[in-house]
Each structure stands twice: as C-alpha cells, then as structure tokens.
Length: 183
Length: 270
Image 1 (cartoon, each protein chain N blue to C red):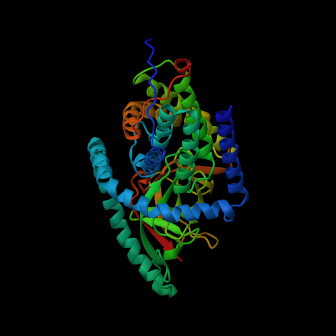
Image 2 (image 1 turned 180 degrees about the vertical axis):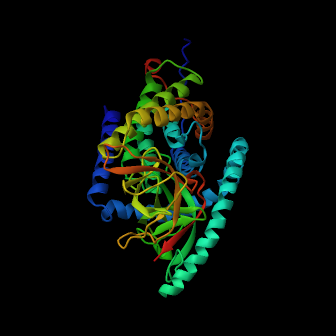
Image 3 (image 1 turned 90 degrees about the horizontal axis):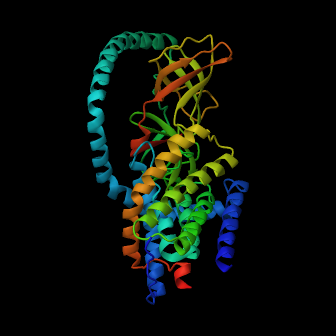
C-alpha cells in the first residue's frame, strides 16, 4: 500500500482551533440528541457523537481524541439525563484508540475513517453493553448482538466517510503524522 | 507516556463520576452540575428540535408511504371491529349512567378534578438501547415533579423521572425500569406492566383465573398507591402466555403510543 508522504503541519491558531473543536462538540451532542433518534435504519440509530469522536482522534491524535471523547461523553450524558461517566468512559477509549490508530496505521484516504469507525463502533457498543451489565440492567446477549450492535455498526460505518470529510473540512486540518513517517 | 497518563486519568475521572452519580442519587455535586448544565443546554436543544422537525416529518412521511398499504388493510379491519365495539359501548355507557345515578356516584373522568395538564415538547431522546427516555421542555418552573404521569393523544407515555428548572426526563413505558399498575378491560384482570430492553411491554402477575383475550385494552388501574390515575389507555393485548409451570399469566401488550414519533406530550400534575 502506498505510503502517504509526511506533511509538515502548518502552525495553527490554538484559540481558533479550540473554537472549531467546541463547535464540533456542540454539533455532535445536538446531532446525537435531536437528529439521531429520528433516523431509524435496520431498527437502530446512528451514533453521531461516537463517529465525531473517532474522526477527531484520527485528525488530532490520541491525546485530543481522548479529551474530546471525555467532554463529548459528558455533554451527551448531561443532555439526556443519563448517568454521568458511562459515555465519557466509552468515548475516551474510542478517541484514544482512534488517535493511536491514525498515528501508527498505514491506511490512506477514505479507508482510514471507515475502518476506524467500524472498529470504534464495535468497541463502543460492546463497552456500553458491558457497562450496562455492570449497572445491573438487562443485557440479553443475542438481542444485543443482533438488534443493537450489528445494526449500529453498519449505520455508523456507512456514515463514517461523509462525516470524516465534513469534520476534516471544518477543522481545516491535515491528518496526524504517522509515527513511522515522522521518525 | 504522557498521552497514556492523560487517557488513564480521564478514564479514572469517568469511573469516579459514575460512582458519585449513583452514590448521591437525587442530590450532590454531580446531580447539581447536571441540573445547571441542563438549564443552559435545554433552550438550545429546544431550538434544535424545532429546526429538525420539518426534516423529521419528511423522513417519517417517506417511511409512512412504505407502510401505508399494509396499514390500510389493517385499519379497515380495525374500523369494522370498532364499529361493533362502539355499538356495544353505547349500550354499556347508557347502562353505566343509570348505575351511577343509582349509586349516587360522581361523574368521574380520566383526570380527576384538581389535576392540571401541562403541554410540552420532546426536545431530546436517548438513542442507547438500554435507556428509553426522552427530555421535555418543561420542568419544576412549570410545576412538574418527579413521578408525574406523561400522556399524549394516544395514551400513557411514561413518568417523569428527573426534573430541572426548565426541562424534565421522562422514562418511557418501554424502559426496562418502568413498572405500571395496569388492568385489562373489560374484565379488570390486573397486574404490573413492565418494559424491557427490547421495547416490548408485558403485563405480569396476572392471576391465572382471570380470562384475558387478545384484542382487549389495557389501561392504568389507578390503585391507591399508584402514581397514575385510573383509566389512562396503555395498549392492546397481543397474546396471552399461559403455561402450566408458571404461577401467573404473562401478557404481551402492544402500546397505543408510537414511541418513535413523540413530539407533543402532556404532563399530568396532581
């Protein structure tokens, strides 16, 4: 597979960058709470917040991905009256691993977000299921696998490429430099 | 190393927030912070919900086109059944009026005197399978309290489970932590209606001696200790599970409310 050439990152205006990330955060939370519930495909809803967190991880690296995931998870839980901490925990893992993947993997173009969101969705949905099991809620394995995880992963993966393109355009950012290229 | 430390710290913080959330249920710093945050975010959500409504309606319209044909046949069948029921209902209503007069009973409506209905709009909804909850745009400022019943034109929607000044969380009937005292009419077989993670409703603990048939209506029983007033429509009996090895009947109930399309609801304030 062709290796992408390392590009020297242009100096960023930190405050402008934070502002853009803040807007992305708010958009992710609003999309998740007001738009996603109305989009039913295969009996499941898309997880816009998780996709945006994965995209931020890909575009800004694991540190920013983890922090963005923590704040996005907190905001979604806050808005939906859900127990604070569950979504944050899941999104920190997703943001961090997406960032690590971007820094080390050798995928280019549209494949990177699709593969990342596919993995992030499986991981995120599974972590949600495990945390709910630990919180003593019903988690019937067969139902959760076939009616929750699989449809959600399909929808999230389908939305990955367009949302990644939009997020990259919004952040005006190049992808993070891969570790082996930067070396 | 630094990046791993940050991620680990954030994970620890998440677990700490979760622990605090459950250890101080209904109060404390975490719940206070959540209330304050919601006060700020709720108007934004309300605006956002209004903005996406035309798109949501368009999406639903497309979905309706696909379902219209099969729904038409079902509705024709239902109309025929309802005409028969209406005729029976007229004679029952007449009989009921006479009996009330005889017993000097006051004319009771579904919502007794003193009850106030506050109209509100659904501004957010959980998309996680484990929580069937919605957020509405009225709260304690409008007199809403935890455990108030929430209804719409179709029937019972759920109950208020958390309140801030300008918003409230409604736990839907389909939530796995929702339990409602309900009864089957006619016949008055009563039990507890429980939600589930699959979204199915089951009327549990119905005595085996009570005869229940598919097609009968399920309404709130309004027992003295219940938070719901009597007679709020909930759903229709879909099928009756009556196995010899079980102590009670398990009755599958199809809800009257379309929980995927909640928009305007009313909070019943006692």
